[in-house]
Image: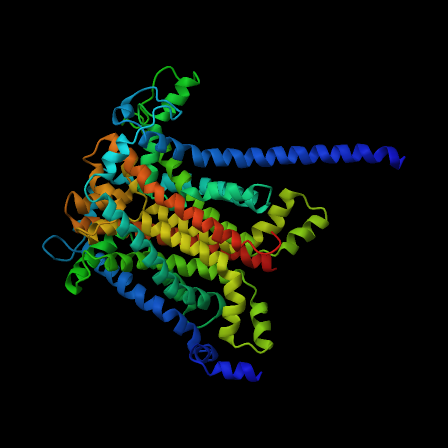
Length: 282
Length: 299
């Protein structure tokens, strides 16, 4: 009996596995298409002739590749130098933000002390105020202390913007890291600092990487403070935004694609980093 | 032990030994930084909102805000956008994260794809979807190619406000889901593999495992993601500006507009104070709700 039943069971099981796989890849593929297709299309628009932007219906395949539109954008004044500024500001913000914010996140996750709840709410509130209103009083201050129109000034306000989130995200991450493991390490003779560096920090690294990604994105995206705090040393989004109102569609499409290009390289770099952190036994 | 004692003499370890001073020492750099660069300017801005143009204190700025003809629309649009965008982002990101975390063959490539919008600015996302939704754009090309529409639809025309709204929701969901995904994935990785294996061993289905094991353990990450996305959604404006210009007023744009175009920092500050009040209210509600559930679980 069992000899007869076994293949039938196996067949049913394998059919379930196949169905499972189809559903899995179907869902994954659909979500991938949703993410990729718009990027493909803006690239298509950016690499066509300027006149083709106003054609309808549009070709969906890259049959008439041209760098005409991109050339026009790149050769517009100030685009390349503002790209460089954007990269410097974003990287500077990651370093400064993680350096200041990670210890605070750790403190909020691990200790209960008087005023903890107050500090937590305070950290949250500090992000809630719109960047527009933060930038205006800060612009006045920066003019007085000589930080106006400098990349350092933009780095500082971007750090202030992302710091609350770095603290919240790292606190959430350290909350998820087993406190017992850290205590076990101290019981075994490691100092508290040693336990943090050897136990909590490695376990928290994926979360810290997420905080770094988030910081980069926020700085890269930020256009309002960068516009207000700089005159000549603009970042790329500020440069593009300033030109948008007076520019034709093809300039905007090329600018949109150009703003995306560095993010593709960035994710490629971060993906490998995240994957190394996927843990052993992958 | 001797090694530990010697290490305790070094500078950082000495800080770590003092239990009372330690948390405050760790928090000090953040508190000083935020105090100087956020709380002080915010206080200045609040003061601005209660000042008239001649510097006298009063409610003139708030009166002008309420009399702004775009006030009601911008208020309603901002709330509606949050209600529409945040749930879509959470569901999309959680789906992506759980798919990736099941580690099917090729999941690495899919993670790369899903994470692509991470470093795309809201300005760029608005431009990307402008290429889709514009009259002679790709959406019309595709829909007409499929025979679903007879002639191009003017999605971004002032006559089609509901389409402008949809375009902004789509663009924001497309862009910012990746940030939520990374936060959730980071949380997923902190859940020990044993939990999944134990649940599987006891015959829990994938859906059952997700609801009973994964979601409760993901609570800190989900809470972080939810708060972060909602706060950002209150400040939405670059996407709206790129897609709709002035046709879909939102609170963030009004604050910008009153400062830049009307050159009135007082009314702009009043709008910002309103956004602040709304954001605080929403955050308190979130934290209350989530904390209650945590104690339920502890029981």
